[in-house]
Length: 145
Image (tube, rainbow, N blue to C red; front, side):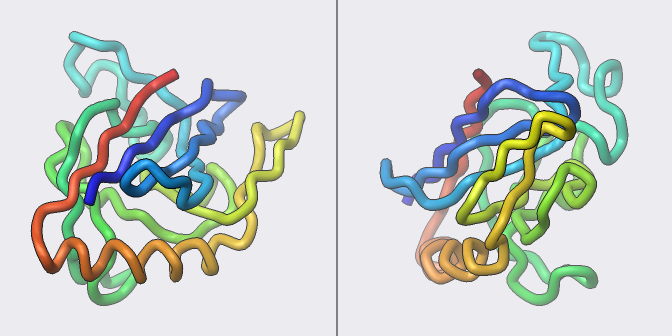
């Protein structure tokens, strides 16, 4: 299984996107601001807990998390980042650098937008990704606008 996240441009501190599994739309996403400067070391542009991970291709794994529980969807081996989870949430304040998913993206002029029906989206996503990750490697490709 191949996952692809197509990001839209950052508005204020919010970066919305769409997540596809094997070419089919699965969920809306929300992340922190894209601060990435291609070719420049991560430590020069990263703001802890307020930065979207760099565009690229990453393996998805399952890890036990004290905050999110067993078999938490995790984006592995992100340069300069640790504990990047895919989880429920509603706004950029819930991300801390992670990726939140939802069934609805509500655009808001004053804050960049919010994710709605996040737990429903995460449940549906987990139903597809957990067995796929257990069966073999699953990769997430993240594309910047």
